[in-house]
Image: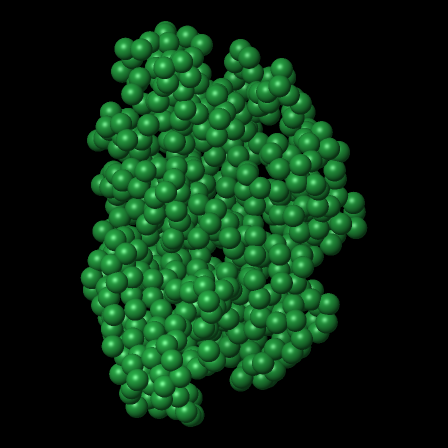
Length: 626
């Protein structure tokens, strides 16, 4: 059967109004354009509720629409989703030519007729909490505590190697088949306090700290005691001082909440009897026994099969009370000065547990920030056969933006402009505004390759061993190419919707492949000062135009031939719009403009169109910088 060539674009207000996620009870107007030459007998909007798969059909009526394309008739329907959650919709049209199913083109927002129907997604939310607006327009900075900075006296503990070669390669060789992660360089909380002036000068507004609680390893994702600061990092007093002094500089602190598993050498599990033999492993009658899942043969569930990380049972009421109660872990550290939590591997939480965590966090501190570690589209995430509904308004404020990280790397390294544009448009279509405003826009983390290496380093075999990776280093040519590319990536990161997050040392040109080579020490007095200056410059522009970058709108203006350009704009008519344009292709590309624009990077005034050269990035403010 021939297609009727209907037109619909879910990101265009002419077809869906409002665009993007909506509050429950909101009216959504959808318009489908059908050629006048097609005799339409019936047109319907078909909406399916993701929760129970209940389907509702809305008859679409032809309307007089001045914005409709010539020789097309506009068919319109109004839907009012009353309950929060996900909805899926498509169109069904009966004509004199037969029956037609109009759905989404794979990888696009546009309409198509295809054998495998792909519906459009509609996110509906019911906000229970106010948006933590203090993060909007700011800058995150992630610190791996042991490797950032040391100040004061070292604390040496049995079984832990305290190294004296700050900046040396972290230990990677297995011992008896296991990587122990027991070498420490001495970074601590007092070291962060000492560097607060540097962070303030850089433009940071929120520190995201890797786990700081008592644990055996240097990474601290194997918690031993949630109520103790690890002695090698400092004390509770040090933490309170850090929060207080940071706050005076306009910097808040969020903590890494590792609650889906603990360490096996912990107060709660006590596999080795170091905590008096009262843990779940050593004592079947332990009050912590139901926090874990044991089997008849004595084995237990562990995180991804790693036996040093026993998985917690988040359906156990006593464990959830331990975390969320009035004097629980979450509220305790908020009282001590933290401004929020980043939830490690949140997709392993049962959905109800995320809501309980959010309720406790917001009850203690209404403007606290709750960020989740999610590597995919968080709006429709399914894990363990369960739809997570993170953005229904009662769970997460936002997530780490891994999909955008990957798209930016692909664009800057390979010139794939269409991918980065589609990714951003997908986020804007699926995520509520509150989630977009506080989105953690990363280029690298402790779990990924350093951004400089990702942009210009050798691409190793996926199965490369740690020994092979330890021998890989960027050549000077690769490094200089990487810095040029990183400047483009940073300009995108700092101006896209959401909040940029700098992984400590990226601003100095640190390199390295995956763990542990991405966790080297910050290179104090050996920084790439030119790259640092670039970060400061773009952050300053971001701060000076906060009204646009904090909560402003987004639209793609170009995505072809290696050119990606987008406009950020405010609903306030007094605020000019700003265009970011980057050319990561091999040829100069013409960028269409209207009126006068000022390049905020060099002060050049551009009238109407301009040419973006290969490797060039522009930040264009409409008007003359007024």
